[in-house]
Amino acid sequence: MALVAEFLGQITFNLGDNEPTYPTVVPAPDFDPDKDAARIETAIKTKGVDEQTIIQVLTKRTYAQRREIAFAYERRAKKDMISALKSALSGSLETVILGLMKSTAQYDASEIKASIKGLGTDEESLIEIVCSRSNAELMEIKKVYRELFKKELEKDVAGDTSGDFAKLLLALVEAKRAEPSSVVDYEKIDEDARALYEAGVKRKGTDVKTWISIMTERSVPHLQKVFDRYKSYSPYDMQESIRKEVKGDLEKSFLTLVQCFENKQLYFANRLSEAMKSKGAKEKVVTRIMVSRCEVDLKKIRSEFKAQFGKSLYQTIFEHTKGDYQAALLSLCGGDD
Image 1 (cartoon, rainbow, N blue to C red):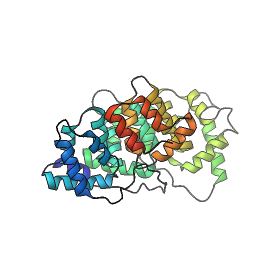
Image 2: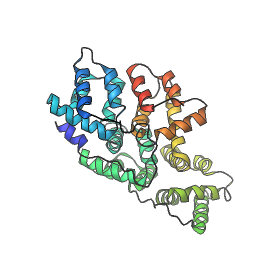
Image 3: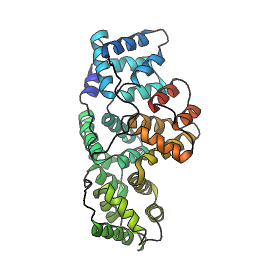
């Protein structure tokens, strides 16, 4: 029972930051948790497991509804649904379904934990999550991280990274970003654009501290205007400047930030495309984006994907994946464009 209690302990709907959501997974109408729990129980008990039913039910319910199904299942079967699913499923499908049994914040927190656990850090995953999440999302991730792992996220990140890369991630995790304001401060925009230029392209070496403070403390609409203004000082745009000035994980992190400020859903569309193009599709990346964004902005990621690559995300998933894993992803994708 511990698992259900652990993962279903809290529920979050509101993403804050007043960011509108574009989910592909929405509450199922005429929802009946008892009926769903019975279907799942039968599917698990079926000889050879009826994966299709499990996919049909769980990918077409929101996290809040899946929670209710888990409680109903526990009442019926007298056992924990997450453990039962874990025993019944395997491989990529198991990863998707167990991911869906966590709230978005729990899932992000678990993915961060997995990226810094054990030998070597999976910097790519760490960068993707920390640099693409909003203030409100990061606050929620920190709270959930503490509840799930009895540790502070900051401490774990600091213990696992170093140098300016660590400083940037920690500044982001502090979630000190200003909220968007209805007042456009042109003077401040100009000042920040000039400061970014003078801290980088204009001088020998890079004053990374200045870059970190501007990029982790200013609101997103403000930064969009700053990057625009930046072009009147620098012969290179912000992304080109980052590529020239810094390298390695720090470069990747700054680029991820700027790409997310400019168009977060396009950033995810590009990540999905790269992951599926790579040999042996980088399943981990594909799974993470599909699971973590399906109740947030996957619908918008889909339209950015189509606009960018002239092919729908649905078609691309269809071509690069197979079996039950494919069925689950296509269901989360929610339609062809």
